[in-house]
Length: 101
Image (cartoon, one colour):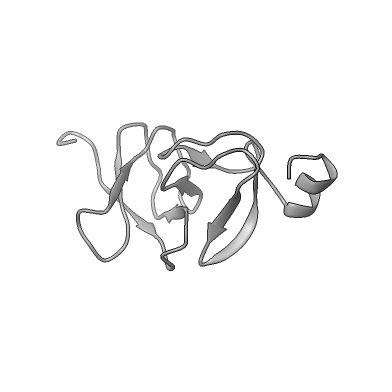
């Protein structure tokens, strides 16, 4: 972790299972979130600034929660540290239509 840059992640609610990264990240970069300096997740992907990172494993069909609100449904299993975006997230209505939830 010493040769990697550290990035701040924005997580506003304890229910959140994603955070917003405040800078571009590369695999291996630690992303610190919350009030405790020990709260961090290691990025598994290249993630663009202001995009989402999974703070925990999210199972297919589970809600993705940002700022304490449901923002969509995981359309495949998402591992902690992975990017969360349109490739693995759909709106709840789309996911219901496609039989994911």
